[in-house]
Length: 497
Image 1 (cartoon, rainbow, N blue to C red):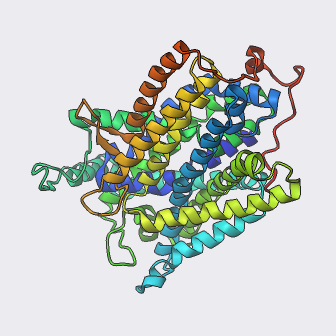
Image 2: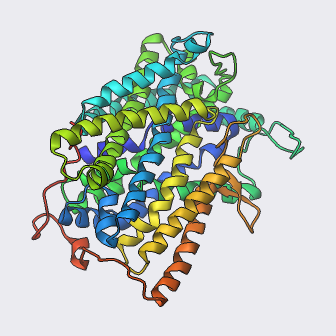
């Protein structure tokens, strides 16, 4: 049960409460509702490999994916890039949580018109997150996850029953959403463009599908998801949770539709800078249509819903650095006290990196923070997931494929700016080379990665280039509690506690 809440606590975040409804309100189904099929597709995927990951990790004492990669392929360089990618990709995901807390504080009236006052909610969000995670380990967020999920279910249950009744039912809500999203919004590039997509047209089918599939493939590559998985008591716990976690998808679907409810309610998410900010839509909806005491409960649930996963993410990033960079390269003889100190510092640096993402990137589409992290973390999938099933791929081909995917994904995402901003990383959709339809950059980059991987593997194997030493055996991937050599539950609270 704890693992179920812990996974829910770090999978369903400000992404769920702030970013998805905001995208639904602003541009409709393609940029928002893809999150629902993404979470549905996700669980069969993780059911496929989660048990193998738990088994090999507990047989060999692996705590991170980088640990596994080094043991499987016998190469420190591949392990290093997996660790660095995990830390990098976690930063924009934490940035999304900061945006969520900032949205609640801004609607609550904290801030002002001056430059410093406008960023005050963000600075407060950063300070709260830094203080909360500096000395707490994984168990504290796990316990709070129980409270957070209970509050969220209560708030959403009330909202999804009361608000449709207030605004004439779902038929009236969908009519209002369709009218808004089908409003012409011509641009120089597309004179027939609409405000959004109530139902995706044929040219948007791959965009919708690739966002869902790419996000599903990426999620369990994140270090915080692996941390929660490896903390379960046995091999089957994670797989059982994968069967019942789709209950959260029902919650996500209802939350997403609140974006359409806000359209019908004519909610205006005006930011402190006097500009429309879609990320404020859900807090503003509650502020406008609920009594102050219930609005306070809702704001608290949303804020905690961002705080819990951000804590888990920063702990996981710190573990990655401490185990796979600091102790592996910088100070192999480090003791527990030194590791704990470094972990706290790295945890703080990770949050500073997340703050920089918020300050430098466009916050009008906060969902893009998570999608940007997905572009990067997807490039570790071949090393991790393929490695759980086969040793055929060459270690240097995996490294080259990772580099190709990272380069393609980063350059493509950086060079794409939305019409409303000149800031880099303005969108995570771009035309797929040799195809023409728009698709998720992360999935396209993964395709580039895999092409390089397969071609180079064939060449390197033909040349008999050394492929490293595999420290694992076939039986390791099926081991369970009580089997010889299986270690106790990995203590993911160390060294951050």
